[in-house]
Length: 450
Image (cartoon, one colour):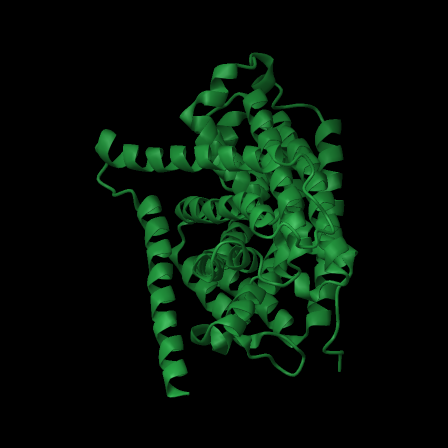
């Protein structure tokens, strides 16, 4: 039986960050970005800006994670910095949206890739099966789950590197995408750029994964910042190269609106049979992302349960030190989202809510330094105070444009559908506020009974 004090090192922590980041987004989002712009230079800039946002966030989270080395991520940070109610709201978002939704999206993307190669397979059944098998692995053992994660992530990186090298080595069938394109600075200030940035930021989400499992990491004051910043920089380079390969190897007309952009590009690089093999390998890579989020997500619910009686049931662990109830709850939420089969809507909804919580956390570094000037800071944010400001401004612009577009479709373009993305985001936050007051009431009744 493994030790209950088992802790992961910086290498494993980095694999969790990399696996959280390299997942659904980079292999699916380009098709939707092409609705807004077909200029490859603008798309390259999108991924560079997205990398800057993620790196700025990782730098700030590194300071907060080193100063407050407890599992829980934003929940832990916001509770300490602002007020327990703000942390509670963020924890609720993480519990419902932060990991369960990306897990569901990764399962849907995996099914989409596999079922495009094998049309006879039921995509919903496949997604649910993958979700359930990976969840069972992480229920069995923390150590086994970490080992599986390391293997899957190393395999993922090797596959991506092979894909990039082959993509640049083969005949450039999509070079017409670049031939007449010129960089236009006006693209940066367009609504399409801002909305696409939400898709890109979603692809980068996961850069803060190490902060959610600080309690499981050896020497978190040193290893949490190291894992987050090194992994984010590495992934940003891979993302830029991957998207240039996609655009270099396949016509824009084939990529636009498609979820399986990696498979489409792979067919052009390796031929139909080789492309099918690469498509299956991409699906295998997505299992690494699913595995990472299935491991990391329940730690937020467990930390909330330690602080709030309402969620105390999420603290229950099995004999192998796994938060079984929290893992099972995340599985259930992901299952429900998979059954909705609404990939684009779930992605945009996830992007708004998670971006808001991340922005609030990054802005919190100003508050934390002011409220706790004497707190130990093993690591201080590089570029402070500019670094957090850049992150917050870019995220605010992206959210504002996405909400504007959501309402514009409903009221300006006279669409029959309501702005469901914005409504769902606001409702998630309102339900979290309601639960906070219910939790306070439960706590007050408990104190009166004592």
